[in-house]
Length: 100
Image (cartoon, rainbow, N blue to C red; front, side):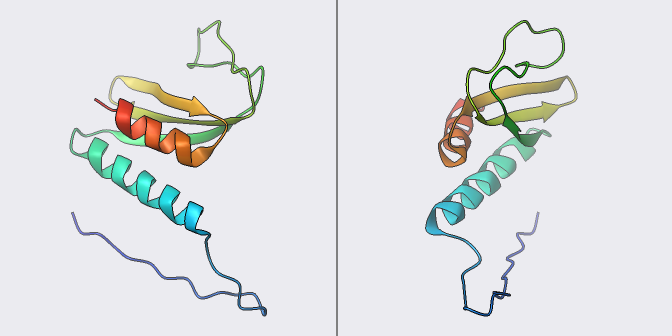
């Protein structure tokens, strides 16, 4: 699988940057997790969560206790949350560690 590298020219007149160092680390982590799971034929999902929102998909009685993010694995068997938390960068890293 080829890796594609994208560059983005700032559109702001003030010469702003496309991403902060934290965003760049997060994007690298997402790429690494995607590649890790793709070796097993799986994908990933990332979505925002809100306090009180149903956790773990349909049929679960649990709810998220905070506003933040969930990162999970998509496979032929369905979806499974790998990590949840308030900060995306930390959730992506936790999902990479939790991915089988």
